Length: 273
Image (cartoon, rainbow, N blue to C red; front, side, top):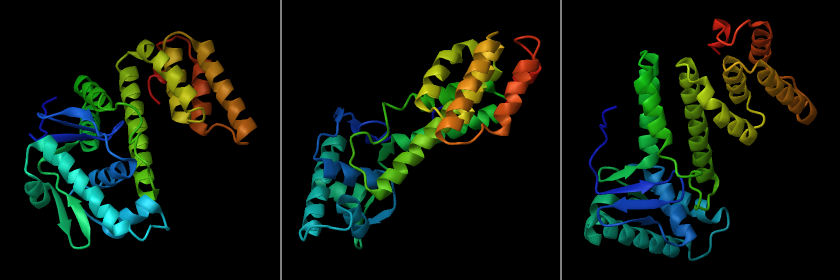
């Protein structure tokens, strides 16, 4: 897949602990926790003005100290120094070009920076587009590249308020959606035996996720392990009934029926969701 992403002065990583990478340095963002919160807020809203009131609420909820504005200005100054070190630009240029004061807020200009979470979304979208176009090789490679950008849980070393927690959950949901799309593509490409171990781990991490359990059942059945596939269904059904009081959805019951009635591991009825 051709890389159309821009040439930049520095890269900011949020798909894991905060990380700043450039020709000048490649290191974790070693600043105070609340400064990481401000930087993450700006990175998650690139080219937008983030009002001081929003930043203050994210940092201190509904009880900001009387020194909140002055403290926030100090945090912004520290971030500008960090960006100056990373980009090689003078602090005044950072203030004018990258981390700009606008009205009663601040804006992180995206023209000279690369944000890994935006690259992840772009690569994942391109991978899905390739799959829809019938190019499974390019699609699988694109989704693998997108997921390879993650270095752990998103914003893992950032104290989050309501706004950042919502953004963190959005990223984790998109990550899981991309994992599902990649596994589906691999199964459709006949690579079902290669995904069973990963699905065993994923269904353990997400014990109520019916989509992942359905993929696990399909992969096992296509690998000739029908008993294992049916056991996955039985465990999930028992867990849902005992802990939530519901049955698995119709698609899972339908898949169980297909597995019970399939005659061979390569039964065509198992190849689709």
